Length: 242
Image 1 (tube, one colour):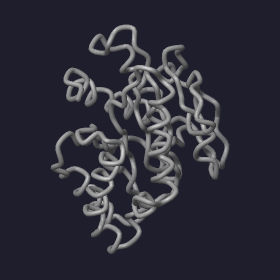
Image 2: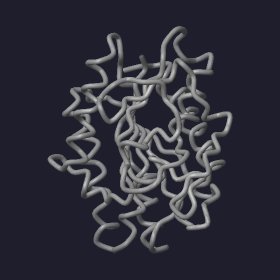
Image 3: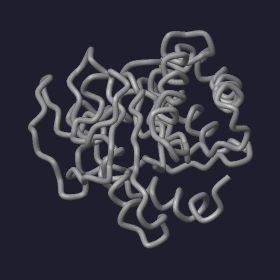
C-alpha cells in the first residue's frame, strides 16, 4: 500500500459542496470510491475510502469534498504508479488550526504521528510515500503569526520526519488561496513557495474558485487541486521513492 498523510486545516479536510453547514452530497467522478483506495478511519482501521473522508476526524464542522480522493484516483490511474498496489489515505486535518497548534507535543501533532505509525503497522508492505499539507489560512490573522510561519513550518517538517524515522519523507504543501488579511496572506504564501528544504514541493491554490464564504475551495477547485498534487507526486517522487 502506498500511504499518504493528509494534514493541515479545513481546505485539506474539505469544504467543497458545503454551504450553511450542509454538504450537498455531490461526489464528482474524480472523487468516487475505488476498492483500491482505502481510508484510515478514526478507529485506526482501514476501510474503503468514501467522501467526505475527514468526516470522523474534523468533527467540529461539516466536511465535504477535499483534495484527497481526487489525488488518490489520479495516482491510482497513472501508469507511473506501481501495478497492483493500493492507495491508503490517512486523514488528519482539522479546520481552523494555526501552525502553532501543530507543534511537537500538541494533541494534533501527536495524533497525526500516531496515526501515521499505526497506518503502516496495520498494512503489511505499506509505505508512507508523502505528507500532503494544506494549512496557513489561520496564520494570516496577525503579523506575528505570519512572521513566525517560516520557522514554525520548517520545524514542523523536521519534527515529523524525525518522529517517523524518515528523514527524506516527501512533503507536498499547498500555497494558500485565502485567509483573513491580504497583507499577511502574501507573507505566508511567500514562505510556502520559497521553502528550500530537500524533498519539499509546493503547488499553488491561488486562482482556484472559492465557495461563497471566500475562504474554502469549491468542489471543482478541490478536484483540480487533487490532480495538481498528484502530478507533483508522480513527477517528482513516485519514480524515485525514498
